[in-house]
Length: 144
Image 1: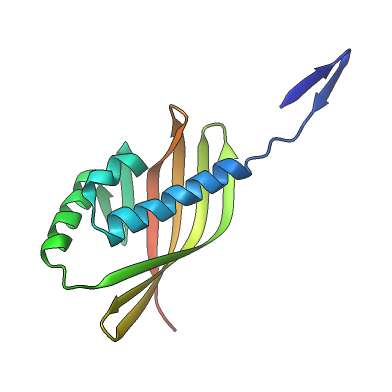
Image 2: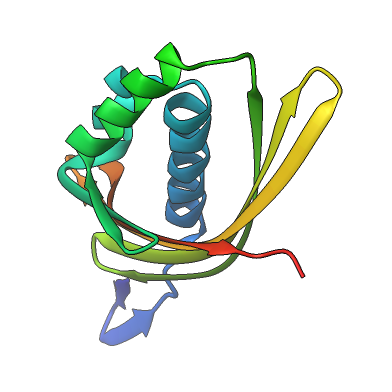
């Protein structure tokens, strides 16, 4: 950001932390609302129309994810998914943010618990002052 003071140009650093937090909330929201609650109706809240997910060698679109949600609701056997994230890198250029993070999920049913982890990245774009995910890349992390 440039500020003008008399005959001097003063550069003021731009604070992108609010935009980074907004994208983190989008990531958290899509995993809670779509992947945990299997609510395909909320995809447009979090994703651009041309969103793609690169998921373990497959390309998923909003339609692919919506169909997954519908099938997952049918086979739902009472498993609860709890998500947590460790965001470790983010960069912003204009109305685009690239972010990398660890995604942790705990699946619970009755007394059984299963934990999984992914290494993921997203590209978010700001459309009409709203951040949405345009691209996600997900790689499962095997337990050692």
